[in-house]
Image (tube, rainbow, N blue to C red; front, side, top):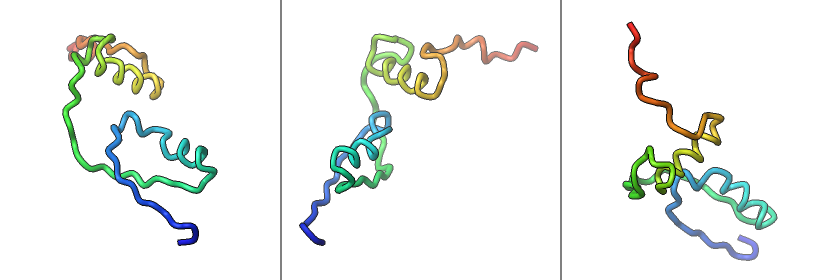
Length: 83
């Protein structure tokens, strides 16, 4: 390895990982890159999923917005069989 190198291992929440590889490459002018691998589950404590002010509710809203969905969760009756 010319100039040396370093390997780092860190746990990054999936919701935080989107765009990470590109941001790392841009910040280091391509000198660093990431290799992401799923490792383990950990419960996210942060309140109710349907509370828009809780940590969990904010993460869900961000993911839904990124995917082009409405930030608020649809009502459960939308999924009930109408027959």
